Length: 262
Ligand code: T3D
Image (tube, rainbow, N blue to C red; front, side, top):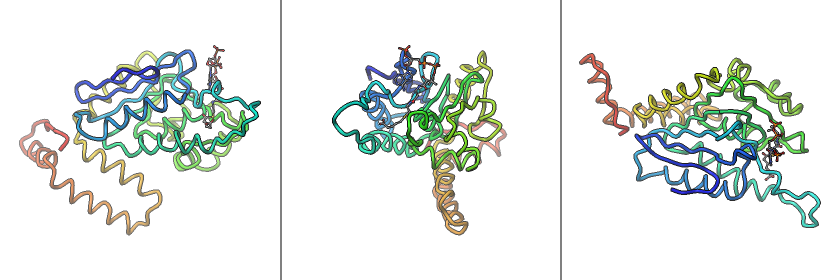
């Protein structure tokens, strides 16, 4: 597929979505929202992708909303809520509901919604030189794109509140230490590391990956009893997959499993 603001490809079961407006640190425009939506929707069914890699081109990952699309002096009343309804909320839902694992490779600075879009992915790895900036308060806003839901759950309300109120940058190593992301990787080793991670997930038992992410997401609002029931139901479903049969056979035959994602 050809796009104006993103690069999107699918090869060897790995889908790659690259935010591609490097001159604006990959800030989101309406066009980018539309194009990302088309790309993500193409991964809902009828494809052979088993992992999605989301990253940015150039020196940044994503600087959130492109502020050149906002004119605070305009006589017309701004309704940011309408924009959130139309674009950011559906984007977070699309990302979190994709039926495959989603890796976010934070290749450089992430600011505003850019941070929270990254945190909505299943596994987040970042270059050591990357920074995460909840910059919303710098322009008089609160974090959106599920930031106020995800971040306190990852690092606790004390740290989340301070990061959001100060807009101070958080470096990748500290983000990893705090459990906000999975790993901070030396810049020189970053691309190879990301490649090896996505290739590994591309041959993982995809339905188990999806069950894991869905169970973990559901756990934040579920009771223990509900979660035990959910685990039972998902395990029942997984126990009927080809990949489970293959996993157990491979274990018994002392060989590497050949998972097919079914
Ligand atoms: O509006 C709604 O719909 C509500 C939803 C809001 C969601 C949001 O994301 S609100 C938050 C919007 N984002 C920001 O406030 C971040 C703004 N950017 C920055 O604070 C800084 O650029 C960074 C901290 C991210 C990086 O700083 P630095 O010094 O490394 O780079 P820079 O020089 O500021 O940026 C490089 C270029 O990108 C620059 O353009 P220029 O001067 O070279 O022509 C800069 O203007 C441009 N840029 C960076 N961020 C944005 C942007 N242009 C438009 N919109 C941006 N968000």
